[in-house]
Amino acid sequence: MDKRILIIEDEPNIVEALRYILSRDGYAVDTHSDGSTAIKTIEKRNPDVVILDAMLPNRSGFDILRDLRAAEQTAELPVLMLTARGQKKDRELAERYGASRFITKPYSNTEVLACVRELSRE
Image (cartoon, rainbow, N blue to C red):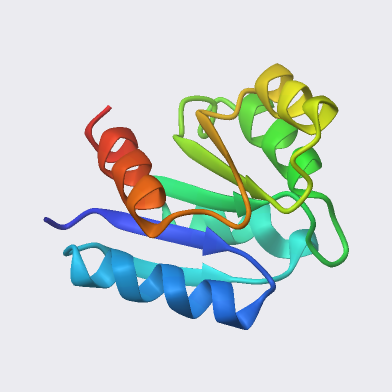
């Protein structure tokens, strides 16, 4: 498949669960857990899809998403936003900043996998 997924998430259990389901489906999976260095990691690893947690240490996923959309190099990069905060304002903020998809935790593995498959084909 040769599609690279970068998971930016600080909860080890979630990282491992996502890594497992995506690797099993044929994706190459990288992970990162610090919001302050997330942009540099994205630029360095050049993923096909980013799975981005909204609440990260040192920098919000929403701020990271806003910066990704503002940069020419990453403006079209597919981003699946994950959050434990499923409030309407969070969904609206993710949409306003340009999230490709938005999923609330706890999520279904099937739902995440379907979103990644769709985003990696775009």
